[in-house]
Length: 148
Image 1: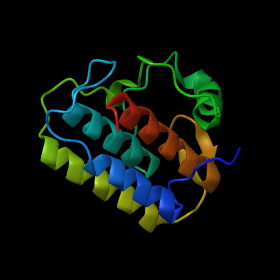
Image 2: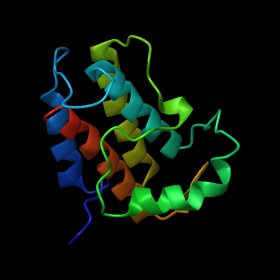
Image 3: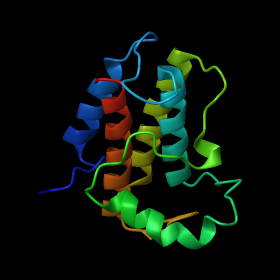
Image 4: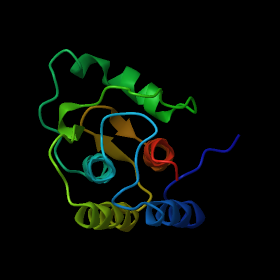
């Protein structure tokens, strides 16, 4: 099975198409976030992957960065209602249109940075393939959560 990759133009366009199907009233099939919070969450994850600092990592999580990375880059889907890093928790109200635009800009910024290896602040060194797949897998998980 070939892993999809957000750096791939057709996969990128597939994800943009799925995002475009969301509306401010789209409801999740599971989880606590509303659609605007999910968009903000996904944008924040990509922003950190693009180089934004990751703040507030609990001390007990730092030694497990390699284990987190293995889960993130494996083809095994994420379980529903999986916990997340404190920086990625979106509990405040968010504006749907602003967060949708932010997510699309974050995705475009990832592409502009290029298909290169980068160090993630928690997971360490990630190849371009790992980065592309990890971002695809995360977006796919949440877009599936919202039925698109």
